[in-house]
Length: 362
Image (cartoon, rainbow, N blue to C red; front, side, top):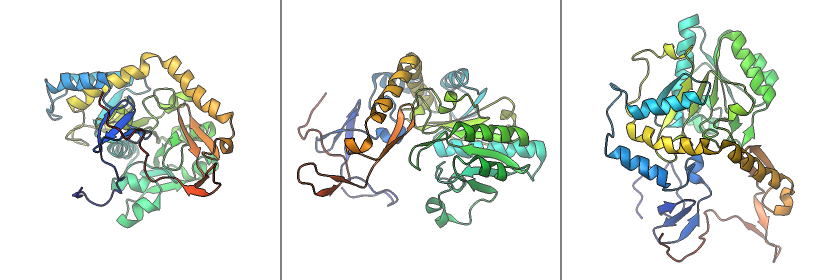
């Protein structure tokens, strides 16, 4: 197929055409098991009946109306998010990067409103990932993503992840926000320690800075609770969500408190499609599924990784270690694997292999 898209993506040598549950079929009729889930997005799999029903119902009512108005789907979703989290108010957008952009802007605006222009420093972690906008890619702390777009926004300091002492040295009266992923994804599924999160909370309280948790990947039940911060009971001032929030339909959200939200007064920030009725309506089924049997889901999420941890990774021949939280785990792979029959080393295939080459229609 002729590619008419910009070359910033390297596409796999297959073209998915349709999906159902955990399976995908390509244009040649070959069937695959989808182990990526749209990169932490398809929380209920492909074409879940509840999602299809919600999308179809809302599509016959209202697609887009602009943020001159509010809508019933937007208010209903915001209400459910606040009922099950620390938050009082929600800002809707279209992606995780936009949610983090809003969170960082709100933190700076809040600090400026209370303390003036000098309080603008943002503390972030090395090897983090917060999005691809110029602001969020600068905060992410990975030069490979940001160096080609210099000069970068100023006022951003990076500290090693899970280093409380470095955090103490970095946070000061000029700090307006500390942003942390409760489980770093891009760097290899690394959970933040309770000490690191508690230190961040105490420092933010001491210096009147906003604690931001980026839960774009960890949110919507991926760790066994709705959001990862709920495992340790250390609540942020601002939280961001996206990816599985819409189970494949683009939506992002920034959650915050009544104390901080007023800094986003009329005209300070916005989004053309944020709070879109279709997106907000489609999000309600995954939210219901996440809360349907939470205790059972948590037990199942713990049971799978715990069973895996009882067997040495080298015996399974798929890695060296296991790390993560709840149902979100990562097995650290070796770069090559040994063929059990011939003894020769063989590199892993660059793309998923077909489960069955025969076309199937369900």
